[in-house]
Image (cartoon, rainbow, N blue to C red):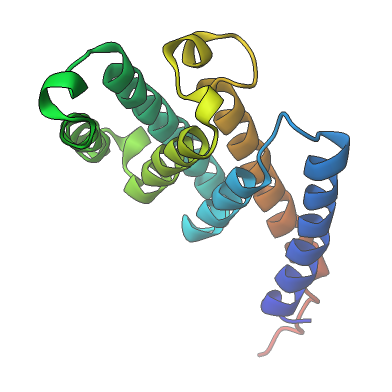
Length: 178
């Protein structure tokens, strides 16, 4: 079978299993959408061992940068003076600058992987109003974006890696041509 068909089968079956697991067995402490973002990032980054490393490192770096940005926005009371949109815009601009400039360091060279982690962190924070406080962001529980988003993304990247390996096994060996 072709690689595309093999990957279609492995990704769809594991996608169904991941959805079931995240929505039932692990209901609550993991985010299926963040897992699928990381899963997509794995394939976007090449779908191999290097892609797994780049996905994990980049996603986690992006999460940390976004978490710091949110903490700065909430902790430093500049929103009262500048307005929240202006203050948040300044902080996001500064932290995104860090994300992109960090690409000079080989471990952080896959900028999209970092952006996916950054965006997923803000998605969680903005969709979960109770998570958007200094107390929630510094708590040691899955209400903290710094914990729930990375766990979800790590699981997603691992599902991506597993789907690639299973897809590889499903590909039939083509006879060698002389």
